[in-house]
Amino acid sequence: MTDDTQVKGPASYFPSIEKKYGQPIDHWLKLLTSITDKKHMELVAWLKTEHGMGHGHANALVAHHLASVKK
Image: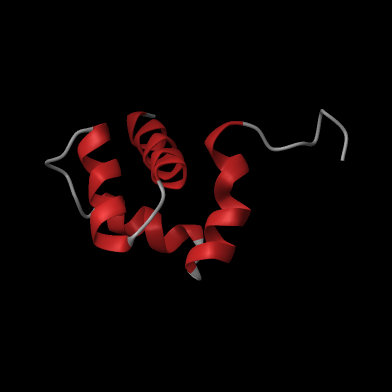
């Protein structure tokens, strides 16, 4: 992979998230979409406590989700 085609930012975590937690990224993004009353770190904490996700993976999903919601 060249630097031009390499995935960067939160999406770079997606392959390892799918492998470790056994669900496609769309699954996690749909869950996050269903929660509208929490801020960034509250969503990270929710993924960590309710789904046993590590901080980096949870943070990457939430950052990606919130960036797409703001568009």
